[in-house]
Amino acid sequence: MTEECICLLISDYAARYPALIDLAQAAEISGRPLGTLHNWSSQGRFDVFKAKVGKRVQLCRDAFVRFIAGGGEGPADVAPTP
Image (cartoon, rainbow, N blue to C red; front, side):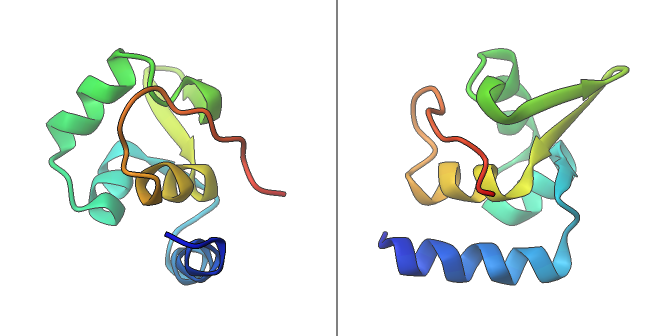
């Protein structure tokens, strides 16, 4: 996916989701089952852009969109966009 397409996706999701999203919102964005996202979180795939608030996992929306646009495979090596 081109950088231009990724930027358009980020803009679209920015209008509908907060900057920090929970795993349920991430499942909506990615179209993947919530259980898959829980597994990925446990495997450390989101560690670069994940924050824990108590027991809740919060993800940087823009970095998550980049991760999914890149195929969502392997550990994330993306940084949050400014």
